[in-house]
Image 1 (spheres, rainbow, N blue to C red):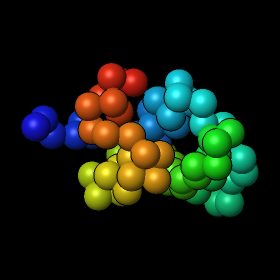
Image 2: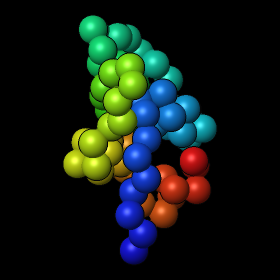
Image 3: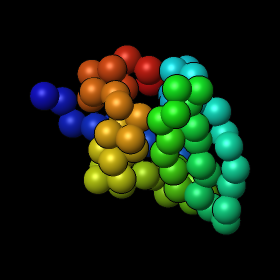
Image 4: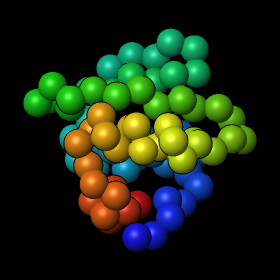
Length: 74
């Protein structure tokens, strides 16, 4: 099992966009994404900072993506 890479919020949003997630709204530095089938998640976007590994795992869980599926999107 490979470690998750250090990714920015923009990179996470771009990867999720490849699976059909669309930006629903933004409140401050948090961007809400929703998939047409009802899945939804929140991605924090802080300039110059990467998304923490725990938060990244939660985003993958919300998006119903395995680690391998997510890595292929990058």
